[in-house]
Image (tube, rainbow, N blue to C red; front, side, top):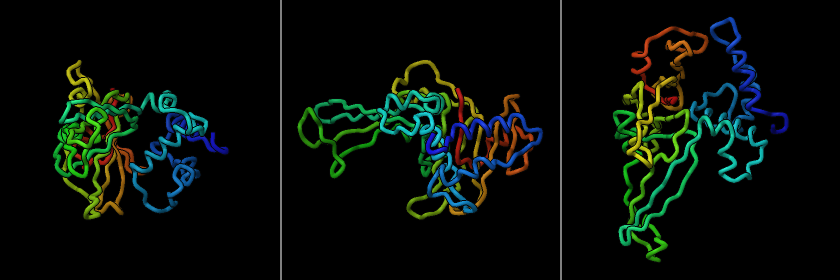
Length: 263
């Protein structure tokens, strides 16, 4: 709780309302009332970024679990129900080209943003994500063993996989300021094993259960809607107050912005 604001309580009440409502769609008034507390930069009536809103909402839920104590160490923060569901760890491995010394560091994550400029599919974007980066010149690595700046390689891998994998396909072009509207294919079933630190283990299968879509030619305007797989296994298109039954093929042919996979 943070001065009377508890995002976990709000989400619990919202989910209960959704599960017990006799109508197809409800107005999330409880969430709208605390819009500015979820993210101080949010403005009611102004279109906001869905990924930004998701991150702020999950972070607010995390703060509620920690009773607003942000000074806890990383291992303590990763014990909350939020991290147990959405959280994973990335490993950054830097290998010195001179002495072959290895330096590992770890970073907690709640979602995985992927560059899609050169990728035509989710798996291609993941391949690019784990491709080693060359560190040299102004971007060289200070090796503790060599005691000097050296050329090295740096590679990210998923070290601990989350129960719910949230992927953001980055559609904002930082150079042009425009939207990347290209088609990026994504599968109904995803094996995360090739992108793990231990890539030679058993398959780590995920199943797609939600797709959030941004329609519009610009990142600064447009409309959001989503496709969701219900507990009965059927897919629905949810667009504001409209809830329509659809097929998986329709959900897989969208200009996805956010993808949600469960294992």
